[in-house]
Length: 398
Ligand SMILES: Cc1cc2nc3c(=O)[nH]c(=O)nc-3n(C[C@H](O)[C@H](O)[C@H](O)COP(=O)(O)OP(=O)(O)OC[C@H]3O[C@@H](n4cnc5c(N)ncnc54)[C@H](O)[C@@H]3O)c2cc1C
Image (cartoon, rainbow, N blue to C red; front, side):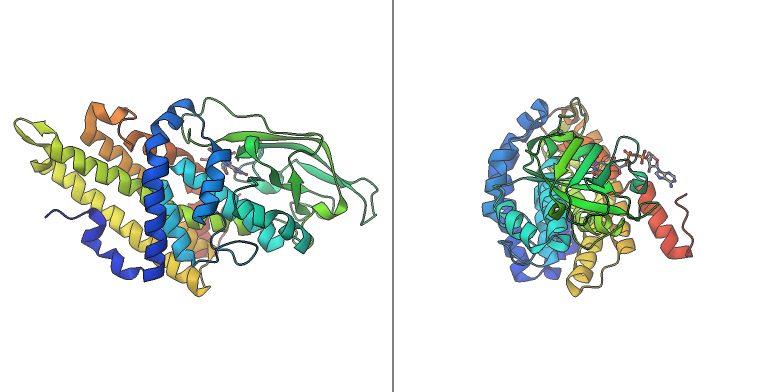
């Protein structure tokens, strides 16, 4: 009886019963409610976020690893495994959940005032309110410290006066459909990024707009937009009270990057399982493609990389559940697992040949999506630099 790639590694034994049950529930949901629509969503370059979010809320995956405020409070490993199952469907759907839970909700949960938490988190956990996270700008992606978005007090020096936000954010997942945006902006409270603060911005505030970014060739089952802030006036209480500088946004990025470590395994697993099934049914020279040595060499090599990625993800999950996971360890996982997932997707596509370039099979959709996953949440190069700094003590970013 043939075994699946991950059965060969016997990784099930490393996952606790409760985490497995959560994983299986998310897998069933993804199989039934998401996968059948993906080809259409991808082709249309759109996804019904408004309808999907309450379903994901009922499933319990929005902010699932956070405690309180209507969140499920699961283990970090369960959250990772949920990301894996969602990304086995599509990276765009996992992105929706990551941005909602790990970026927008986590930012409010970790840095928000009690009032901000009460106002937004329960509705966001239920999928009734959609969040987005605005850090990247047209001229500042990998180096957010240079951001030009400004927040100034209406009455300088008065701690209670309104804030006025102006600037542009770029490549913001869910921005065009969001009810609330967590926006990071430079204040005059410090130079060189030290004065960066986070703001909770209801998207119906006058001066806020979020035009859709069209013609993406990747992550098409995901809504991406700009955020344009044209003198958006917010009350003094809109800023996160304590956190200053890049520590705020980076703490959120670490949460989302962690989810991607698992998510990428899901996309790669789906590619490999599809390629194995295809190779078993496709006859070449009167025998199944799966019976040829070159095919088996490809499958064996990809299985090794998939299994190693899974083991790395589970190890990082264990560290996160223990409370000892460090950012440079997340970089190990993000760099390796996304890079290997893209390599697996491309190799799987060769097994399907012409059939592999269609939406009938998920492989090229995953391959295209993974190009975005390689870039967002820290590019591969940024993660190499983070690991390099951990190894040498030298920061080589600039
Ligand atoms: C589909 C999609 C969704 C996104 N969603 C969001 C979102 O919700 N919120 C958000 O804030 N952002 C989001 N992003 C933006 C994403 O985080 C940025 O694209 C990413 O940080 C890279 O920035 P950049 O594209 O400006 O590239 P740049 O920063 O301009 O990088 C260009 C190249 O330079 C390399 N580079 C950077 N620094 C160095 C260095 N020190 N040495 C050598 N090479 C270097 C990079 O690795 C890259 O190869 C999204 C992006 C995409 C594609």
